[in-house]
Length: 292
Image 1 (tube, rainbow, N blue to C red):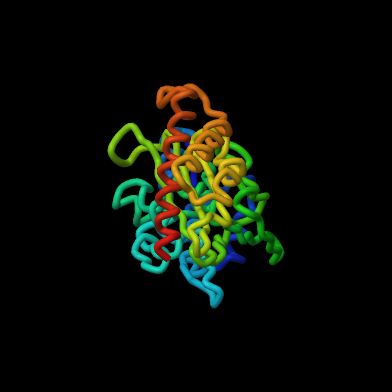
Image 2: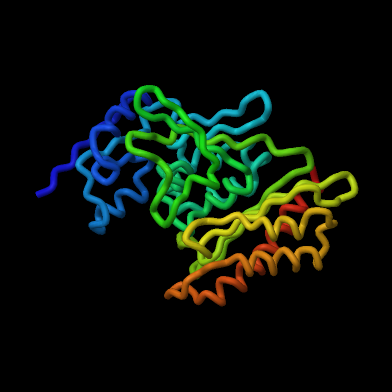
């Protein structure tokens, strides 16, 4: 019989010491448990130690600094994020993505930090973190700290850049520029509580004439990791985001896909959907940006 010990540290330092006591597979953190418990039930994980992060204040808080940057504690739950009006106004695409995580019950436990660390190619929040240029704040043994862009955090399916003894503390999302907005949409086979066949996040910035001055496009579920598509972003910059401009961005998004055929959809289907969603999401982001 396999015994699993449970601990609930009250500080980052205490959690890091516990994390350093075993291997990455042997010691697992619980930022919500909505992935970990399923993995344990299915036999995919058998940790000897589970560390609950929900009792560490820094990991559950949500705050904005004076510049307007958002800091999300790694274990802040999706329900609390969804109830935050400032997040909805400033990061509407992320707000949409968070709202798609599971059921109402799961929302009370699931976290953006956990969604990121689980490193699923189809994770809903990662594309929005990518287009918002989010940065990971990481704590390690001996009081060490480091930062890492979300774009460098995911190494492969189920694999992230955390090293032995390291803990994701919070995510920093820089304040969006004036006349900037994002949006997120996904395609799922069912009406709710399903995994994305394709997910798309787009952020655009426009000037007073409605011309796009900056853009970012990210896709989920079409490659081993969620990906930024600079070619799609470049197709939008310098344009007025007219239908022909969105078509060019869509073509670039489809071309960037590296999907697999599986029971949820063929590779060709995913490429087509990525293009369609890129057009829709870019149009939505543009409308929001112009309204600011």
